[in-house]
Length: 111
Length: 113
Image (cartoon, rainbow over the protein chains, first blue to last red):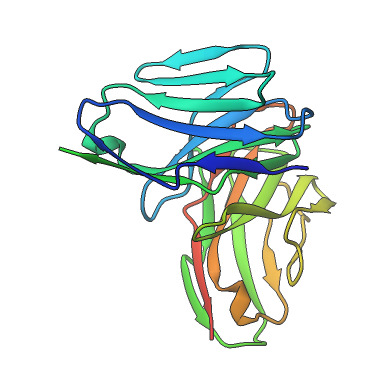
């Protein structure tokens, strides 16, 4: 099974709050888990990524938490800002050939 | 500037009229791929190419063709478009053996009436 399940579909957060987006996968052959940020009218852009041998990766306000045994990973956006309002996609890479995406989360950060 | 370009950016066409969406990258990447994005479905891979003359099907290849005659170009061909191919299309590229997520083009919004 090559699906990646993402939740929630939409998320509204107040400025300064924490945004949390969750993803789950089934195929243990996935070996790379990137997150993409997409603004309206633009293509997805890589935000942060993690390998399954690491439990957490932090880059600025963005953190990926990875739970290999549960086959789940999540994106945390600390101190969320209105400029973070975008659609976020989790993905899983399959032997560097096939990138499987979640269905996306539309994040709105209210000022 | 390193980039993936797509043309056209917007296209309205009629059922059955063959069309080609071009994709070009200037980063000398071996791997190129096409995705379609539909509301509520995320991005789904149509075709990918590991190098020149090497292509393979993604998850939703029906109704599409691709070719990879040059390293920098990876056109998407719809020989007989149908309304269910109305979508937002993205081309992407990355260097083989890397897993940094790749570069995406700006997208092509296709409407088939």
